[in-house]
Image (cartoon, rainbow, N blue to C red; front, side, top):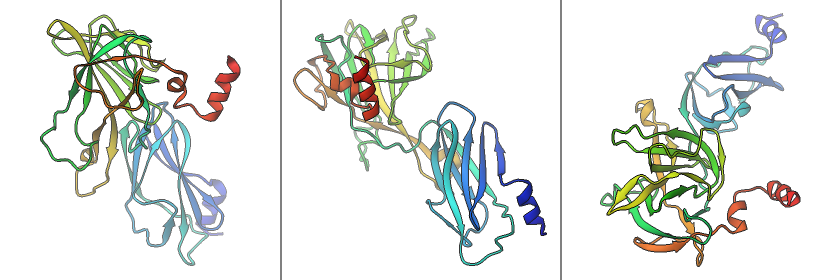
Length: 296
């Protein structure tokens, strides 16, 4: 019996240990190997896997270098199949590097409606938008920083999600903020929260309309806060440093008002906040909607 076959009989699992995430590959059929990521932490992590060896003798069912956001648990990545006739009894020693980025990378952006941050039926004035790169010609509307500002006292969540980070104001001029992870992988950042008024905690599920703090920015004696929607874009370029592969992109949110759907708001204009049923269920799956209906 060859050494390769002996190793095969002892264990059918091979791995490289990587802090909290382990990459393993398991044999399937004759000469095929399935790669998996075993994520021992609850938070999503975007991974890029690059082989250090010549892969001409193998065919992948996914694009290489491979990248994917790894959820908690064991996640299938891709399959490698031998090309042509090879030494099928020999256990391959795949050599690869992995790079990790905190959060969801390259998400599929969902077109959803955000709510006006007031209680149902309340009038709220839209201060305007903040775009730091207005004078720069960009390839996409997602490349520039973009945020919206509302005059109000209480800051309310404008989209349902899970609180990812909470940062209290330090009293040195740096505003407090809350980051909320949305279902599609985007992040909503509520910036300008008055010190001592935070009403959210990390890993908390929140609903649109829920109060999460008090506005702490001030303009002409009016309180306001800053809200942005962003996501992480990861582009593999081995000619650059790994830290340059990821960048933050911004999305222009569309809003539901008492009169219109999916609109961009106009500066210094007052809108009425509404929370119709379809806003609260817009990101639910059919099964989730069915479960909600049964619970009523």
